[in-house]
Amino acid sequence: MKTVKLSIIGFGAVGQGVAQAILQKKDNLADMDINLVVVAISDRTGACVEPNGVDLEAAIKRKKEKGSVATTDLTSLDVIRDIDHNIVLDATPTNIEDGEPGLTYMLEAFRHGRHVVTSNKGPLALKYNMLCDEAHKGGVQFRFEATVGGAMPILNLARDALAGNMVMSIEGILNGTCNYILSRMTEESLSYKQVLGEAQELGIAETDPSYDVEGIDAACKLVILANSIFKMNVTYDDVDVTGITKITPESISLAGAEGMVIKLIGEVRDGDDAIIKVVPKLVPKNHPLAVGGTLNVALLRTDMAGPICVEGRGAGSMETASAVLSDIIAICKKEF
Ligand SMILES: NC(=O)c1ccc[n+]([C@@H]2O[C@H](COP(=O)([O-])OP(=O)(O)OC[C@H]3O[C@@H](n4cnc5c(N)ncnc54)[C@H](OP(=O)(O)O)[C@@H]3O)[C@@H](O)[C@H]2O)c1
Image (cartoon, rainbow, N blue to C red; front, side):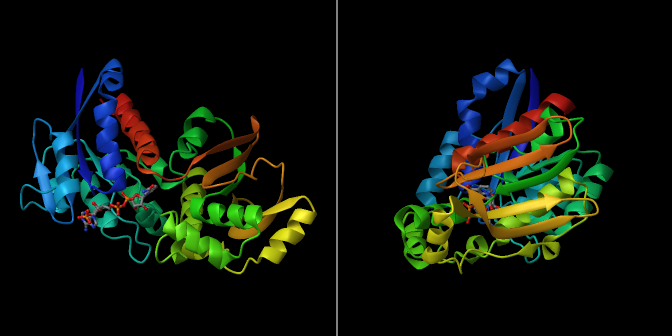
């Protein structure tokens, strides 16, 4: 059995979901000949470190009861630099101003020869090529399935299952909060403000929802798709973005009369007619992109396989852990 040592940097919804998944999937991992040992977990307050494996149940309990996972004064950077391990999971908050703290954590991991798996879009939306170069220099893998579409397997689908195909374009719904708001406005003929309030009460929208409803989150995901699948060299500033805040019940009802729904669609394609934009669009009601609720969906047009559509839950602790774990397993299979 191969022993692979992991650190979890950031122990919120995603970090704890991954810890829970590792506990639940111990036997499945063993079937794959993988003994995945979490040697350190950190949050803003410090870290717990155990070279033979952190007690994950106790760590989750401590975090829930005390709000801190720390049992030492070590920082996340101390863990990344000084604790012997193979893979760093960065599950720290997304920041699209400067990518921190994830950007520094990832670069330090590469410099110390550690593979990186992340769910954090910020650093990739700003410094994709630099991060890939540094991973390459460090001779390590950099995987980020969870940054786009949560559980929906789009990056690894394009890279592995569709290997050999040319992906010509991708269109999709990449933000579950916007999809929820537009779906409820459509179903209940409610105003944007009414549904936003409801979504905030349900915890689907943040107190400050601008990152989602202005299309910024979807734009960051589009940048990651553009750079990783189309090898475009773009950042967040290159995306033409319009959010959903100005959509009225009247426009939704007019669309409905024509057999259409309004969806916030991210679209990317390369070449002479290159495009990278997030914009509300009319979609026929029976179209594969017309999914409801908080679902995410993506339609990939490829040269050999034709159109391929994938949908799934774009967020959630265990859903996101699914994508993170698939990346960790891919690294284990290739490198150990
Ligand atoms: N939740 C989802 O469904 C989902 C889906 C896809 C992608 N993502 C992305 O995944 C990442 C994590 O999301 P989340 O929902 O788990 O966020 P979260 O619940 O807010 O957790 C973030 C964690 O990062 C820690 N943290 C904050 N600043 C830090 C620092 N400077 N150094 C070390 N740790 C630090 C926090 O520490 P404290 O606990 O001490 O505050 C917290 O444990 C984000 O980038 C998010 O956009 C989330």
